[in-house]
Length: 301
Image (tube, rainbow, N blue to C red; front, side):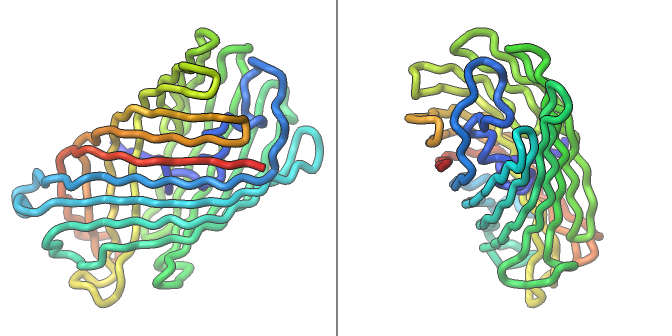
């Protein structure tokens, strides 16, 4: 199964930040429209503990994964139903495999730039399209070291307590093109409960314990694709880290313009695959699940 999320390379970071705050453009019809905040700053830190390998060739090794990111977004509404979204961000990743036979680099960084547009011109629908580029901070090449992504996302308000989500996520670059569907629904069975079943964007069950504190159980999709340097044992190799995890979330929302989330969880078995510079001769290093924890936040103004 191919997982896409979080983070962060599954969607441009600006869209993730908006969804965490129940952004007013996409909100279900459960209350009066909130104030509009054109600027947002979001950040996240995920630390996955060492995972042992199931692949016999590297059975004595282990894998550590850490991801941090920060993003800034500006939304420009040029009328009451449509507008533009501009974003910029940074994604830093640590992929540390003990005695890695393919490469010895452990730190990888992307700078992200994105632009998008939204419209509510079609009754009961909100459509968003976003394109983004992720530039390697160590090796600048628009062809060899840059990832390009596009997102088409539609949200349909079926009624006051049900939303239907449909769309596509496209990734181009690093010798491979991929497409993922966005599909699912959001259901509000009562005032305090919210069921989010939108793959692969938001899979969670939330309970509003108090007016500003929410408890949740969710699925996190972790994936990172990157190219290593020319001076590595496998020069310009392309690696892909992929797993998913189940977690418990504690979400603090003191106001509509602020959100802070802490989470702990455990990943399922995953795959760390490495191919040559042309994305050929792929080697799969299967690893076991391990615990993880982190924190994220969004501030809008």
